[in-house]
Image (cartoon, rainbow, N blue to C red; front, side, top):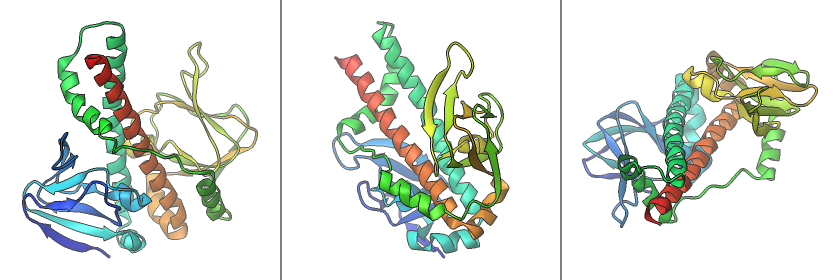
Length: 299
């Protein structure tokens, strides 16, 4: 259940700040994502081509559009309404993984940029030489941050409780229970699955069991982890450990997604919302780091 739409070169497809109720997949042509379009501090973020999605975060979480999308040339796009998402996935089960990969690719790209900015901050604080090429690259994001249009909010306890209620009785599938201290996966391993926590606590660590061990976060029931390894096939970026006795999780592989949507669509909805939140939070942290670097260079 989707609609084919055509946009002329220069036409606004979606507008920053609007509440979204649909998302798009480009069939033909290219589009451009722009922040502060038509205002002071206007900056181009990225170019979108055939096969790519945009607007999906707003549709998944009813979140305001984070950028304006302009047709860079004549564009043919498929528009999928939020209330037709279930029908769309039923007819196109392969699109579940495609959308996850689309968000995952943006997470991976932005994580690399975020790491560069943090290294530049460390260098600037140490009075090292300024990397003007990097500064020029991140200044567009610093401008976006200072415009005051970026924001992030963590899911509330009520939202997490409601998600937990929806998952009750839906713990079928590949469930594994771990004793306290069990390593679920190791940093550096190649991952081909993701996990949903149903009971206990999972600790995420960098440099686990070394002198430099650092706990990055704790994960509780209805939270997901390991999805980036599954989506990209890259090595695990951290180690996951069962930090409570009888910690149990569901294991999900790419081939499980279509059947999982048929049997428990709420799980797919939860995974997509989890990815959306991760990208929004990373974007906020990145913009914050860009502002700090901008202040260091101009302070």
